[in-house]
Amino acid sequence: MPWPAALERQLKISLQDRVPLAPLTTWKVGGEAEFLLAPRDPHEAHRAFALCQAEGVPTWRIGGGSNILVHPAGLAGLTLWMGRMDSFSWAWRDKGMLLVEADAGCPTRRLLNFCLSQGFSGLEFATGIHGSIGGALMCNAGAGADSMGQSVEWVESVERDGSLRRWDSAEIRFDYRFSSLAAEPRLVTRCCLKLEAAERSLVREKVLRFWSLRKGQPHGTMTAGCVFKNPGPGVEPAGLLLDRSGCKGLTVGNARVSPLHANFVENAGSAMATDIWHLICLCRQRVLEMSGVWLELEVNLLGGPWE
Ligand SMILES: Cc1cc2nc3c(=O)[nH]c(=O)nc-3n(C[C@H](O)[C@H](O)[C@H](O)COP(=O)(O)OP(=O)(O)OC[C@H]3O[C@@H](n4cnc5c(N)ncnc54)[C@H](O)[C@@H]3O)c2cc1C
Figure 1 (cartoon, rainbow, N blue to C red):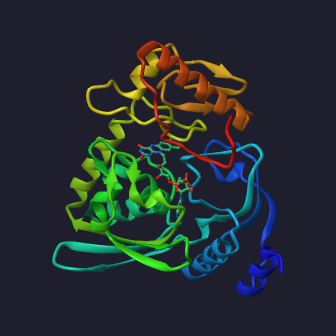
Figure 2 (cartoon, rainbow, N blue to C red):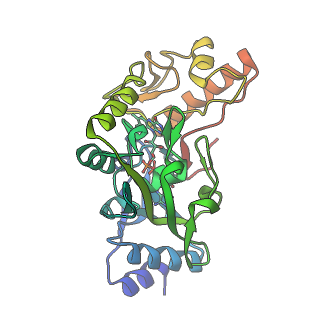
């Protein structure tokens, strides 16, 4: 039996086929998913991912779509869109320490709002960060010196062999925009975060401080956050290198480098994924020629090959 039919039968669901993925991304570009499933819960996600792995079917994972560029030719196989798995619950551990269990598709912003309204500290860095908690774990999303990894108690994932695994925080390496979870094409289904009780006013103050870091960044335009990672100690930040290389305002088709911040590429209206990709390549080449630095991508490329 072909895998889509087997999956539909086992899960008692219908897959959607030829689904445009652009609306599921913040850049609003990219091709179609050959088949798409939005799992309702971790169990359904587990079974779908495991079956596809067993059948050798390419399985793509999308959370909030705020850090991805989808290839114009689309994604063959199954795309799992995690947006329906958006719930979370919480319980006290010790005095002053809260454990929050969240499904992978839970919007990071929703957890931050919960922390703001209830007075819990630990996620303030997520101010202005889009997407889901699963995506934030895979990318170790962060701002300033703070990032997702520091709040993790455990992460649950489905592995390539179909098994369910719970990772304690000590087993995961988190670094600047890096998580060892991303070393394998696994599916994050749930996680547990530990947060501290704090005065609401203090949480709010911290959130406002993180907002102020965003002053020089574009708002209300279609971007995927920073395109490139900062190169690291002793080298200037990617935005500065790009600016010095004359990238601000550069355009390819309807994609343009933000005139506010050179590390943001905007879809100015009807850009294609190829416009964005060619603009990224152009910027990277300019920085290499001007500064001898090869910038590493922060955004994730889905599909391909990318020429
Ligand atoms: C305006 C703007 C500002 C931003 N600012 C920041 C910032 O300050 N700091 C920062 O770090 N990021 C920033 N970002 C980028 C982005 O919001 C974060 O990286 C976010 O955490 C990505 O989450 P997502 O759910 O959108 O992931 P997606 O874009 O959907 O996916 C990202 C990667 O994770 C994988 N993935 C997603 N969910 C799962 C899952 N459940 N299991 C396995 N793999 C999965 C995808 O396959 C992909 O490889 C910004 C983005 C925007 C649009």
